[in-house]
Image (cartoon, rainbow, N blue to C red):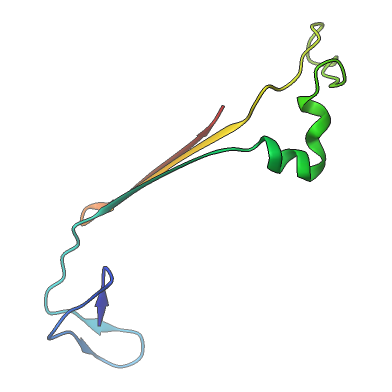
Length: 90
């Protein structure tokens, strides 16, 4: 039976989806992913927001505002104690 991507000798199925494990320990993993979203957002129809002198944020500011970039940062860590995840955009 798989546990953290490994087959554990001695693990037995008790029928249906229930599984009885003999021993199972996970070393844990961490993953980070960062991406600049400008091209994706432009492809989705938001390209004008990235154009100086063309973007219209006049309802939010009197300045000639536009968006320079949008970055997305994500993090997930999993170990035997649980999962921690976070994401932020700037």
